[in-house]
Structure formats: structure tokens, C-alpha cells
Image (cartoon, rainbow, N blue to C red; front, side, top):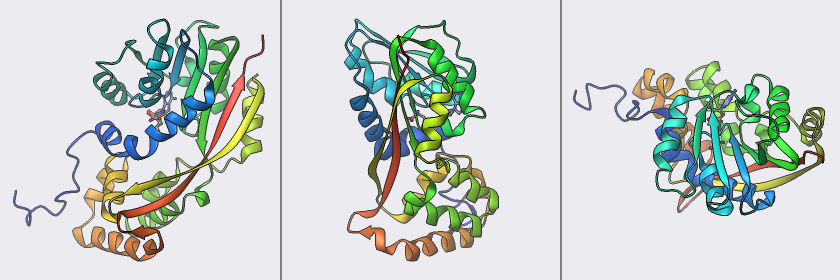
Length: 277
Ligand SMILES: C[S@@+](CC[C@H](N)C(=O)[O-])C[C@H]1O[C@@H](n2cnc3c(N)ncnc32)[C@H](O)[C@@H]1O
């Protein structure tokens, strides 16, 4: 099909959402936040660690050298596509990582199996976050701890406020909702209460401020779309609508545009919570 005949040219799915997530979102967003999460977690050589809702496995991959071959790393995610990309991208990592497909609210592990449990930017997606936290607590050994991060509410991520509003206007309500879904309305106390209610002690919540960069507004929209359920919705509208979407965003985000593209603050709660002895 020629470029002209193809109304969706360049906006169609050329790879799976999991592959796009690994290629486009992990390097600028999830990899730096994984490093921060691991840094605050105080993990040791020999530890047995679990990465809950591991996605393509960036936390598991980054923590593996820290625990060394004396330790062990397991990653679990409900999405088969994510686990497939995780498996492929970790093929040369030592110690080798065990990848499992499964639900965070029913972890297929015995009680007290792990020293450290990680959960990066996923609690907000679980149908029952309380049940998932109870499961994380159950599989931790007494004296072990969980390290989680959860985005602060949408208003602390200016580029995403603007993108979600533009998607709602140009593509539809559902598209706006999808873009808002990673950013729960929880404040620090909501999060602390949820974690304490699951049985954790010594809960520490800090606010960490980072940023994300994309080479252009168009790349921002394309990469976010390709890595999420938005891809098909955006590909389905006409080229004129997509152009309006991108040009509208270029105007709305000009104050976050520089010689290297666009940059936006991103803020996250970073939580450490212990299981008492
Ligand atoms: C934003 S991604 C974060 C992935 C990964 N932690 C990272 O840092 O790249 C959220 C992940 O949560 C997973 N997820 C959602 N609900 C889940 C559940 N009930 N059990 C396990 N994983 C789940 C999704 O499949 C997705 O991979």
C-alpha cells in the first residue's frame, strides 16, 4: 500500500505494545526510576528478590548484578507479552532471572520466600491494590522489606495533563482516560494507609522528582501511543485529526520545548515498607 493510500501510515502497530514499551518508555522513564528504587532499597548480595508486575523486567534486570549469583531474582507479570520481552532482553544477565506469568493478587510463591519485593509503577493498575500488598507482605521473610514507587497525581506531570486533555478532545473520552490511568489521585497519606493496612511496618514515603524527555512532540505522542492500548484508537482516526492533535500539543507545550525536543517533570512517591520480625 502506498503512503498516500494508507491513511494511518506510520501510526500503525509495527510491533507489539510490549516491544514498544521496552523500546520507547523503558529507557527514558522506567530505567532511571528503577535505578532510584533499587538505590533506596538497600538490597544485598545473596538476597532473593521478587519484581511484582515486572513488565519487561527492568527492575529485575538492574537488581540482578547487586544480588550476584549468591542471590536470586524472580519477575512476575500478568501480561504474557511483557514476560516474553523480559525473557528475551535478559538472556545474557547473571544470575539468570526466573520469569513467571501471574497475578499480583495471587502470587504463586510460598510464605516468607523473599528478602526484598519490588513493585514499580504498577500498584495503581491492580483491581485490588490491597490484596496485592497483602500478597507482597506474605511472601516477604520477617525482617524483609518492599520497595514500591507510584506516580503522584496527574497534575504533577504537566506534559501528560496536556496530552490526556488533547487525546480526549481529538480521539475520545476513553483515550483521555487511558492516558490518565497511570497517575492515581492518591496522596502520600492514602498510600501510607493502604500499605499499613496490608500489615507492613516502618513505612517511609518520599516524594522524588524526575523528568522525561522526547525528541519531539510527535515522538512523544507516537511512543506513548505505541506502548499502550491507545495505538489502535489513534491509528483509526484520519491523518487530519492526528495532525491537529500533534500541532495542538506543540502549541500547548511550547514552554516545555527546547533544542533537544520536549521535557516534562515527573513526580513519584517512593515507598519502603518492612515486614517486622
Ligand atoms: C506501567 S507497567 C510497569 C512495569 C514494570 N514494573 C516497569 O517498571 O517497567 C505496569 C505493569 O503492571 C502489570 N499488571 C497489571 N495488573 C497486574 C496484575 N494484576 N498482576 C500482575 N501484573 C499486573 C502490567 O501487565 C504492566 O506490565
